[in-house]
Image (cartoon, rainbow, N blue to C red; front, side):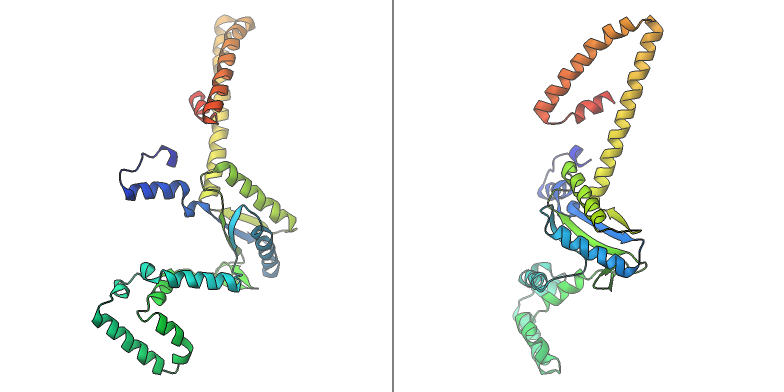
Length: 273
């Protein structure tokens, strides 16, 4: 549907349209594994994470297992952009009075029993912008850690969060991504466990598949109806052939031209349906 949206008339609407069509949110795929014991689900989650992390189809594969490098990298990124991300405007108040109060709070913190532990953070971030940013990013719904991986808080379901390299609306590549997920899961010998997939790209592929099936059915029924009416009117297959041969020849030429120019026959299929 994003392909039919009008061009943005200002920076805000153009940014929103670009995010709908190519944004990071569209590349997120959420996986759930259920139908087995928690240790078995954890084994499958770890197996999926290990197998998919080395695949160029994915930017990241997260299931609760973070390396020290990943944790440090996220912390450094948040620290570097803490003032832009901080929700409290007072964190960006660098007036003399505000800074004086901030450094008084730092001095009080250093004199406390926990001062030696947090001294580096207090000195680097006297306005507490980093702390405010981290608290804002804390989700309202918490996942449960079990056997070293993420689990749903209310049921035995292992959770994974993936980001694909393909844009969310690149349906061919996203379909290949989903096939890779199914193949990888099957290779782990899941037994009674089953894989659940969700996300914008998953919905898009399913919608496109359903729409294509509906168009094929409508086109087939239309051809049968037209052929039935013509046969009822003329009572001759020769007449049907005389009418059908030019039609299908012209249709074939039109499909070839559309494919050469646009790379797809979707517009022609829509017209026929």
